[in-house]
Image (cartoon, rainbow, N blue to C red; front, side, top):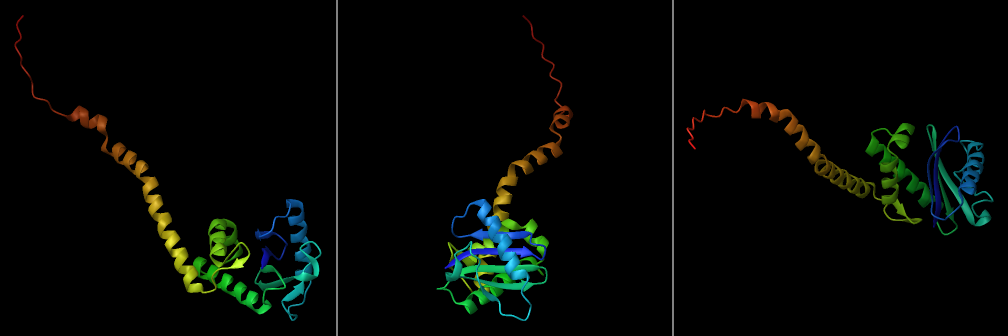
Length: 188
């Protein structure tokens, strides 16, 4: 089972933190610091699996990571998960991000955090892997984008109606209405 997913840059600034077990915020910050120290000091030529730190669970847990450009993608898993399977999952996650953002970069993770979390939820939920087919994940994301656009149209309707009314310039139109002269001879 996946216990946590961390993405941080080369300066140890977290860009995505998702824990599937409850940890107090102070412990989460310690986990991020400890994980960064463990992963960042490793040479590029060594394997991408290592025993997790003492904070996450000790010997029964492993950190599986990949380093892409300026970002570390780290999955903390228990002994029941396949290390190679998780490496493949990281690859699917990064490639999906890359397709959704067209050459994903650190700024995409910062400014589109809701979409990144949605992609992650399509990939795994509650620490369990849901989908590993990138095409299926992208299809779900496209469906979600269509729904968001439809909702934007619905929520924007009152604003569009008010804009149309303002453009009609109703007060001037009322003034411009030519009423025929009514010559009424009323006698009392």
